[in-house]
Length: 355
Ligand SMILES: C[S@@+](CC[C@H](N)C(=O)[O-])C[C@H]1O[C@@H](n2cnc3c(N)ncnc32)[C@H](O)[C@@H]1O
Image 1 (cartoon, rainbow, N blue to C red):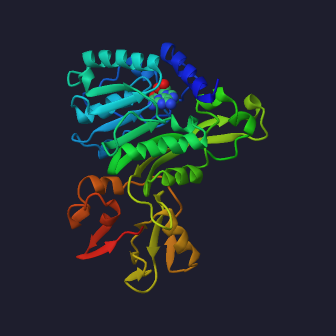
Image 2: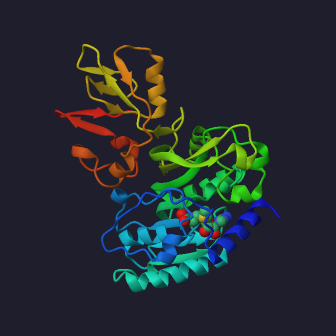
Image 3: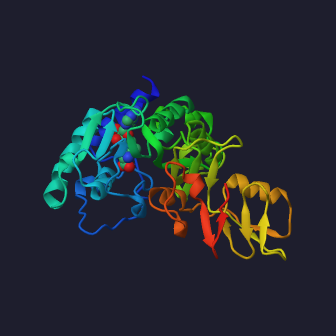
């Protein structure tokens, strides 16, 4: 039996009986007025963070949710879309689909605004999505892709990219590792299926997402998720697994690589009004400006006392928002070119915010 089949079996069982070890209850609590999450659904918390970023969702967008679990996040997305079939949920485990359906029926009874047919549950595989190209505004996956071995991970990310419209957003919540995971754990199919041993390092995950065709990535959150401890796993050192929440935007990857915003800022503190690197980046004196990791490292390499670069906070919100409505006081964002709208209007001057 290959690791995909082991995964299938594990989630078949986890649909029939709550699997307490599976996940962690590390989701931020999200209060939405009028949304009652059935106990049965909340108990199947098999995610590791959230993909539902409340300020970024619009009712006229359609959502693809891959790996439905008990259906909680699909229900949260449906809270915003409220249209028949506006959330498509794909899962390859029929028993999990049945459980999610039953949970939606319960949700319909306790949420007057909700109809089960808002969520169209489709049997299918993340590695070969049963959907046409360029058809989806928002795609999401929580605690599934980390299970995939690297080739399959790339395949799954490319599938998400294929079905998203240009400018579409992929929301991910997934474990990453902070130290090498020994091969004996990586090759343990059950641990992998439990989201405990397949995780990549942060940078490797980001590069995979970029390779799949996402040119801009924003990190929304990062925090500890699990510890692989020396005693339980018979390893030399404790390994902290973090969870990362991010949004990746389907826009071309630049020649010098992906723009990943992880909360770093650059501030010019020299004796002029502005710093211009003549490469599209203008910094105002004394005003921290968001920069992507690529730009932060280029600016750091200048070793200039006039430019301060802050460390990543792993919390940044900007592009997806600008892309979905208007881009600050300058007016509507050109669609579908999110990077073009990184502009700050300052005293009538348009100052480009970094790429
Ligand atoms: C760890 S659970 C996460 C569930 C849900 N996203 C949540 O946050 O609670 C993984 C989910 O992915 C589904 N799954 C496993 N392998 C899959 C595949 N190859 N394609 C699609 N879904 C898959 C499982 O049935 C399960 O619903």
